[in-house]
Image (tube, rainbow, N blue to C red; front, side, top):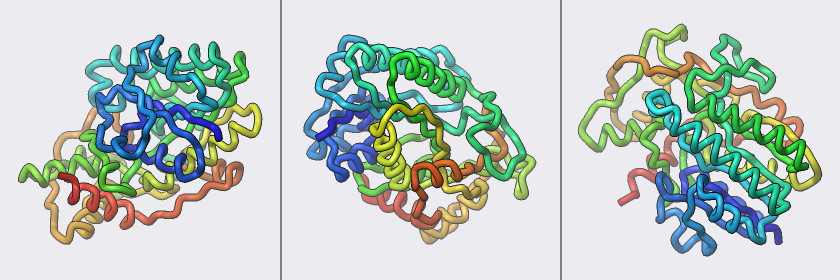
Length: 319
């Protein structure tokens, strides 16, 4: 049985990926510093858990003992914070990835799936972004993910580390209550937090060049995203590859449309209010998923209502 190291495996997406790996017959080792990851996501679910930082080279090196492949999700990910503190993002997201690649090369681990982001793309007016479109990130967060992609590609070629980078679009939903999204930088958790605090949810900017003036994003159910990691892992296991894939639904929804769907899922008017636009936000980002559909046979299944309903179920049942 192959064993996979999942960095950031106690995180929102990482725990879903680890769970899907386990269901697919893989052995799992979680590596997480628990700065954003939660103990509740691993307790009683995963027996092999290492608490460690991506900047701790010795611990990372030791964590690769007996490992056949790595799925690398550990990263700092708040766009606004990255604008305020870019050094933190380059140190953790780029430096941490470099440490991982060095340890993998030394230990002879030759299979890697990397958690990248749609934040690497330049703003454009295309209906859907393809993987070959220009990359000029608006934030240090996006820049750090792009630099890590390039490190993985170049080191992968030199060390024969078979690698796939998955450019996530906006991830929503949950499959288990314990796995719910606790990131207060994502739209839906922000809405839930505002409502719990008796405040009105915020729409950041309403004068973008879009039909209703609010940002348009591509949303994907976390379960579908987790399945994409499995097909990517099987691809890197089949022989040397170095590839990048968008992972989204291929559909765009504005922030106002999302607020409407959240209202429907909760059964009440959430009454959002418009505040100023955030630095680093693109007006529109919708994925073309043709490449991953054709080359890996992966397709998303969940509807927007399923995504939001499952997110609310996890939130409403979390103590």
